[in-house]
Image (cartoon, rainbow, N blue to C red):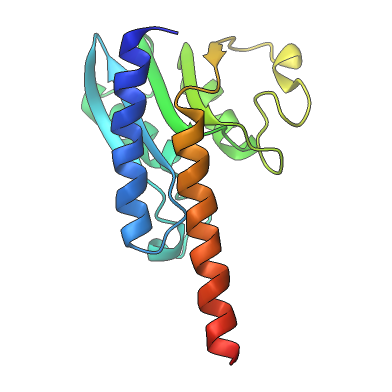
Length: 157
């Protein structure tokens, strides 16, 4: 882990907080190229009514537009939660060479939590590091879902 990883994860956390304000699951992402953030994004699944509007996908789209290329060579993706299988596929297909994530996801994370799928990848290998600012990323998610459960309980009263 490098100091810059903590800084850029902090920027992804800022994006997650934007999602939370919209009642979206608070997951944020940034794409970094040559030490600069070229894309920022957060979950917009509920806002757009679109299952593919995960923070990672949204960030990859913006980074591709910025670089005018679907190949995101030389980029690092920072995301507050371990990517799901769909997002992992987008990371691989966009040729991102490095992934840094915050919290591990025992339910839907497929980088490491639900099997070592990366051992079977043939078309593009990448490096990853998990657990960066993990406590803050976990707290964001835990607090969000607690508020959601409390709200639902109060609606039933």
